[in-house]
Image 1 (cartoon, protein in one colour):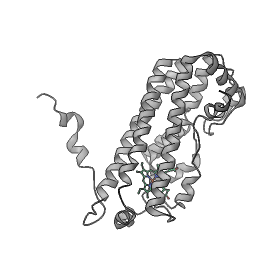
Image 2 (cartoon, protein in one colour; image 1 turned 180 degrees about the horizontal axis):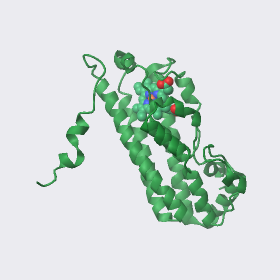
Image 3 (cartoon, helix red, strand yellow; image 1 turned 90 degrees about the vertical axis):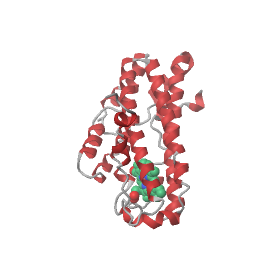
Length: 259
Ligand code: HEM
């Protein structure tokens, strides 16, 4: 039997995964479920790509890293763009089934936490928010793994940037931080290596994209639930605002005024 589209992509399985909690099902709950499931699929791909880029950076594969950051940047734009669809759901539509979400919340997205940790935004205190199980284990594994920033240091070192020893000696579970020496090295490479500058600009695009996602998500939340607390138990908008404008690649942002 030749392989069919449906068999290859497991379409019947995929289409059987949307279970509304509201009874009878509220019209907009299907949108709410599909949008979150779609995000989780993109997160899965993003993590796959970021794992590849770590290897590219450490091996010094510039073109590999450029191609992958191009892809990650474009996925990020799609993640931001998808929120437009969700914004067609009014607060009244959402209220009609929100209570049925119980305590479930994006807070419990293990893959989002994996994404943050992979980028070096290591908020270990968020781990206990994840239900025990394979999701939390995967996030914990990434908390304890070297981040994209650590692999970026390997890349910079190959190009003559001396990464300060204390920076290298920091615990991998700590969030990445800005460093003046790394910035001087990056600045010199920007001026002397236009090929490397292409990568740095793509990384900046990507980083702008992940910050944009947080901003747009806060706005979706604000327009949909206002000042209500989150289903995950946080203060909602107030909590989410704390992680706005947090770059993943601090040093790339810190030198913009010098370029
Ligand atoms: C009507 C739409 C949405 C509302 C009202 C909403 C609300 C919230 C709230 C209030 C929080 C704070 C945690 C809590 O107390 O629950 C949160 C966190 C989060 N949400 Fe949403 N959300 C919406 C859509 C989405 C979508 C489409 C995604 C895509 C995956 C998403 C992913 C997340 C993530 C990853 C967090 C954790 C953020 C962090 O810890 O910094 N949310 N959401």
